[in-house]
Image (cartoon, rainbow, N blue to C red; front, side, top):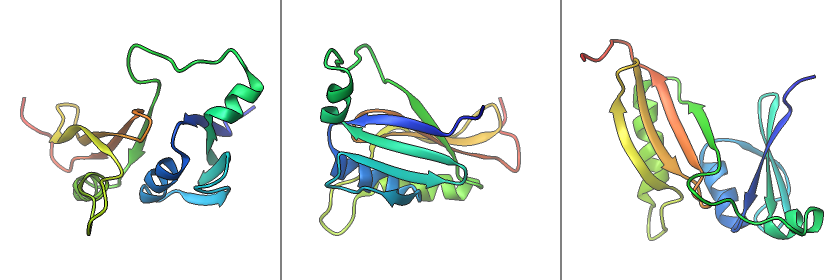
Length: 138
């Protein structure tokens, strides 16, 4: 048995597709107007389903409450890439809105990583990280 996919329920498929595309995932099925969309990241798939899809499977389903529902962590390979990715996701460009919300701006974490946290269009937290070449001082 192996973990094959992570599924996320979205209230806004076009924004979710834009967000996960901006993170560099490969769109392999579906898209902004589809009720079900699939991205690939190596051997792991990220699935997006609209509320309507989930309600067709489980008519009693409701949005969880009390905080974010899940978190994904993306290894950005180096500290500069954490900062660049954070800026690209949160700045917006040429009259467009940012694709991510700011949860925590990039910082050098005490555990030896450059770290930042953004939120996707459904308020799931997304961690951006990379190992620091030198350890921060405590």
